[in-house]
Length: 69
Image (cartoon, rainbow, N blue to C red):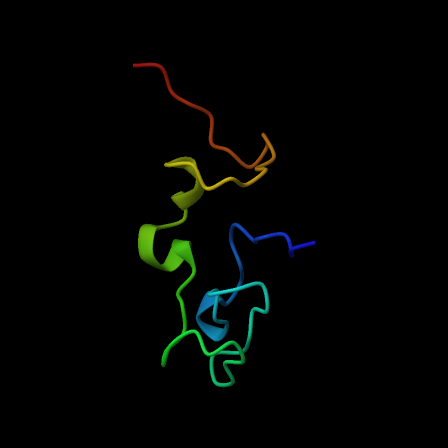
């Protein structure tokens, strides 16, 4: 079973997110290229999981309430 993917890791820059191994950024073990794969929060912001279909089971209390306009 794959590890649960964290929505808001404390230090995403320290880990390669390219596979289920989650290797330290200075010791990549999967050969997933020459550099680390960034966490989506680093690329898209803290609300990255709210847009698109990531296939994650996100608890309802994590989602921000929608505001009526």
